[in-house]
Image (cartoon, rainbow, N blue to C red; front, side):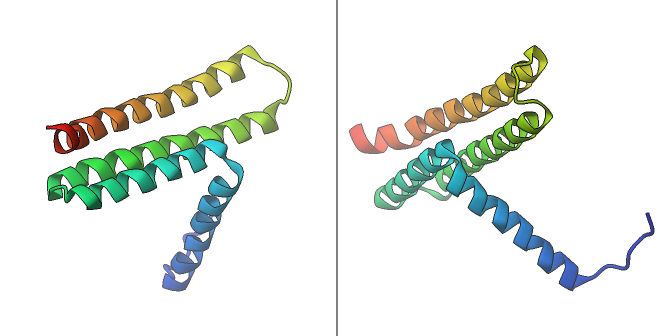
Length: 123
């Protein structure tokens, strides 16, 4: 492949694919909409409780981690379904591993949310 000259226009155009991916994710992924709802609640609560800058960093970081994990999980599942719609034990392992990544990110998000919000709400 020949090295193409850098083009700012091409870089800007490439954003359309990323935004299209986000649109597809929220339109087609039920878990994505659940995470979006949780995000809206967490951000609303963050504003309401006037959390610190460091707390904002923590909250936004775990929100991002959950979305990244869920988007990768969705991409892996879609790709695996193209490879084979039939049950295959190795594809099951791949899908389960991707789902585990989402689970870990979600547990971390709950833990960080508890650390940030519980003292402000109940103490």
